[in-house]
Length: 554
Image (cartoon, rainbow, N blue to C red; front, side, top):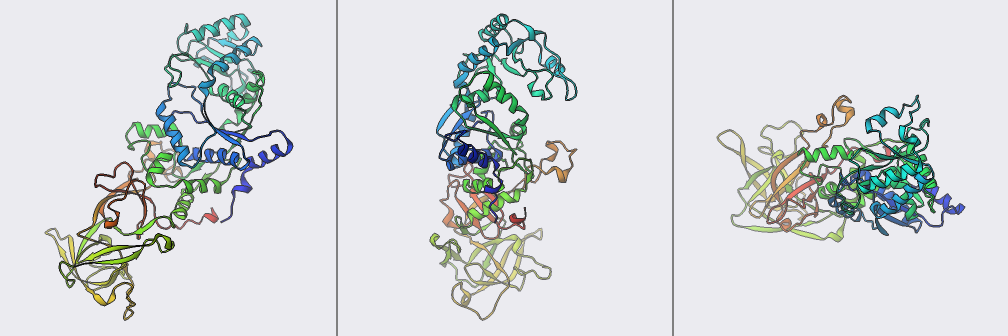
């Protein structure tokens, strides 16, 4: 597969030129999430970009929480984000919070007021919106725009002192109400919020806006390359304005790249929170969720996610990546790591009538035919086994090579068996098969007297370990297939989760959360970290075994 990462990472080329020209002496990046939710696969792209850029050029990366909105933020999210970053394989040089800088941000705002570059505004949010203008019409100036410096200093100090109610006043930058870039039409720098902050408690009742706090935080930390997604491109002039007018010593530069969009995947925190709050999923780490914690629980590996993020590259224009591309990297990573074993998801009992009663023998099987270092295991075999219900048909179509009355198949790692009789219950449903086996056909014996076209998997009945199997389909159906007129909740896939109850080989009885297996014919599965334990096993299907998707043509 062609490596796109080096050719399509234009930011890497910028960094190389900045080092060559001497604009920067050291590469310093940051990953700056707001702690108002859990990270998703889109954040993984940003994490990989920031940390790997700094690593490649022997620089450093900070993890900084942009915690300037106490109403939506929580320590739970702070801790979850740190766990996700570490799980992806990265560690930060410094852990920072925008709230570390609240005093300095306030003092810089006072500097703006003294310079005549900021003023206290009494307009409501709706009034500001009405007066902001449009793309073709300039905005109207606020009545407070011409207040004196002294009056603005007094009002801003009283805002901090808690004299005003939420929304009663804001501090705005004094830039240009006629700017063609609406972002530059006197944006809000501070708002009043009498809310408890997860770190500073009740020390503050005014909080800086993201567009003000973010560039100044970058400057305080000496960030060399402030990398963000394309929706902030129009905010770059404000980013530069804040750093220049606040007279920051360091002057980082902002660069925008295309955010990650994946088919059948919603990555809006608002929508993801709605799924959690309305009980559509059982939490942020539901294996159907595109959150990093959900992917971790489902069984995705950090190595596969990092490889995927490198492969899709860093582009300047938005596009949609096929979800099967990510699944390809999961398979590539697991094919040499996962123990290859057998599991029966929809069991049908088979009694081998000519096999000695009370006898159990141990058969040998490779744990991974592509990785000899994983060794071999022993599998019990006896008179009663389970096979997949789908591997038997009473009246099969042509070219059906599995079990049917009178047909012979190979049991993987075991013997040939022939179906003699199908036992039915009072409703006419097949509940048991009576078969015979040929003892000369033991796997590995070199038997070649005859051939069979069908091979099926099985689990010995007396020692089989009961397990639940969660089979997943996309949680959100793609707009292209559902129509753009469908609302978000109308695109929920009612078949996104199917649970089957079956059995696994006895060697898996001690499997723990996160252990990964390749189940013959079914796909790659991981032991669920939440719902397994105490003798109970639940497996999440990570991906199927194969796909027709060709990543080289994507």
